[in-house]
Amino acid sequence: SQTIHQWPATLVQPVGSPLSLECTVEGTSNPNLYWYRQAAGRGLQLLFYSVGIGQISSEVPQNLSASRPQDRQFILSSKKLLLSDSGFYLCAWSGSVEQFFGPGTRLTVL
Amino acid sequence: QKEVEQDPGPLSVPEGAIVSLNCTYSNSAFQYFMWYRQYSRKGPELLMYTYSSGNKEDGRFTAQVDKSSKYISLFIRDSQPSDSATYLCAMSDSGGGADGLTFGKGTHLIIQP
Image 1 (spheres, rainbow over the protein chains, first blue to last red):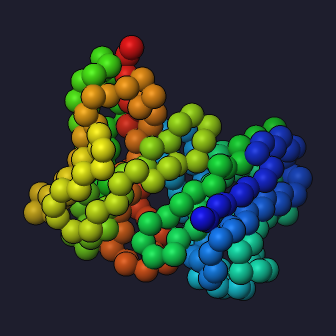
Image 2 (cartoon, helix red, strand yellow; image 1 turned 45 degrees about the vertical axis):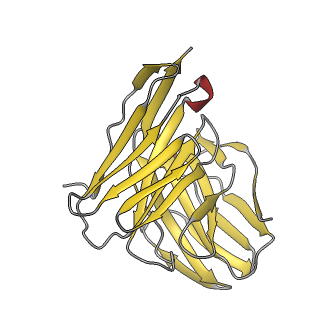
């Protein structure tokens, strides 16, 4: 069966510091991978998606970037965090239509 | 007009009641419809997936899609306190899923014991 992991689970970072969130998927190959941000009262916002290694599409121009160095690894990064980057970050994978989410990373930028 | 509308709630019902959760949408190209359940501080969990119009049943859960009205519903029978969560509808016009899903903002459901 397929599983998806995210770490860290929680993170508190100062404004201006760098960020690296990691997502890995097990039990499937060549999945589509997604990064979402969920802010209170604002629903799920798609940030990036990837259909293969090194292929990244950005949905919203912002302070974040994504990379896919391996088939089942997806990384979300920032060089300098902003207060507005706080939120719940979710990674998801898809083999066809349905998407399956990881446990999420709660990021607080102070 | 927002692409997917969902009443945020909270919706509070007594245990054992039938719950009806709904979403409306504006994009007639949507043809894949999903319902997710999200417990506090957890990732969303896929509950139901339907394609095009019609009904789909899974245990106590029934998903209904009316494409002519651009309206989808999730019914929960014999509701339990463990059903208390936020329910998100999601939809897509792309069978391959490469472009992601369009989500409603979620309805917070509370089942009172």
